[in-house]
Image (cartoon, rainbow, N blue to C red; front, side):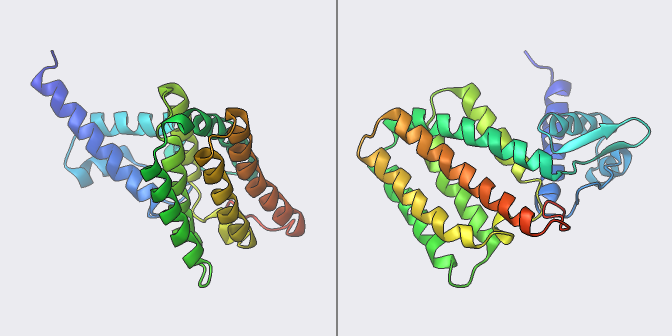
Length: 230
């Protein structure tokens, strides 16, 4: 049984984790920002120990890096890492969507279509960040019923890693957004019709890779730009 002290430390560590992560995701702590344990502990009115535990957790998730003589800082996401993350997410999310498909209900499909409709409505006055938020909400409906917890954890890690980006991919390739919502409906139709599991997996994977291809095309046209920079 956990002691009261252990429980208190765990609670403080979770609080520190949520506090730091929220600031990374909303852009308060930008890539490269130094996370000074003592200062954070003072801001949260806790000791350094739970802050250190929170930092280690964020490091394991790829949101924070630690270097000798530098300390902890918000992770920088370069273009190569972005490509690797997208490629990996395409594979694991495709598999998770395939495994989720038999458990997705009519209500789930209706919810996904409602989100996709909101995404379509944003296209007229395009807001990349809002579109990206809705995009994650849409895909969550499709992969959250995955019965394999290890695979689902990898999907969550991939999405969390993408959240390190200060700007949405769709900021750079807004033309991809229209094709994306069309592909969403295609994936939903496959699931609704009880398509072969491999067909569903490949459709979900191709959907992710097409976004990566659009980003690569953008880079080819803007060789001196740094899209993954905040």
